[in-house]
Length: 194
Image (cartoon, rainbow, N blue to C red; front, side, top):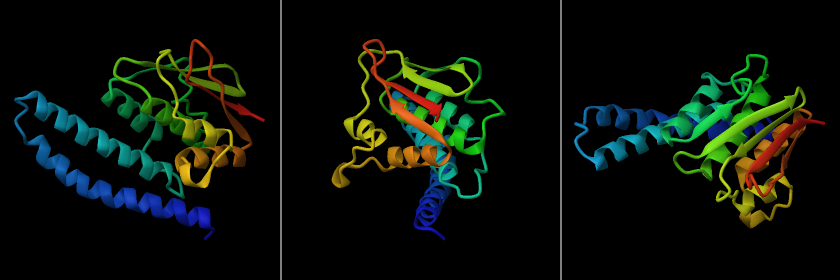
C-alpha cells in the first residue's frame, strides 16, 4: 500500500469510527424536546458534524464511496442554509466519474466553508471540459492557505492538507484546478481538463 493510500485509508477509518459514536449522540439528541433556540442550534450542529464526517469518510474511501457524495455535500450546504445553484445538474450528473465527483464536491465543500447563511454558490459549465464554482457574495474570501495550496505555493507549517489532496487528485485525473477570483466573485474556482 502506498503512503497516499495508507493516509486515505487512515483518514476514512477515523471518520468512520467518529461517525459511529456521533450517531449515538444524534440518536439521543433526536429525543430532546425542541423547545428553545439553543436546543435547535445544538441539533443543527450535531447534524452538520455528522454530515461532515460522512462526507470525509466517503471522500477518502479507497474503493469508492458507500454513499452518494454529492447528496451529502448538498445536505451540508442545506444544513448551513447555503443556496447551491447547479446549472445543468453538473454535480449530480450520472456521467461524472467517481474522482471528478470527489474533486467537484471537495471544491464545493471548501467554498461553503467561507459562506454564511443565505449565500449562493453557483456551479456552472459552458462546455464539456470545464466547471466553475463561484460564490455570489463580494464579501467572501478563500483563506490564503487554500489559495496557496491550489497554486502549489505551500509552506510546510501552513499547509491545507485537503486542498493539496484535491489538487493532486485532479492532476492524477488529467484535470487542473485554478483559483481565479474576480471583483464580482472573490471565490471563483475553475476545474478543467488539461
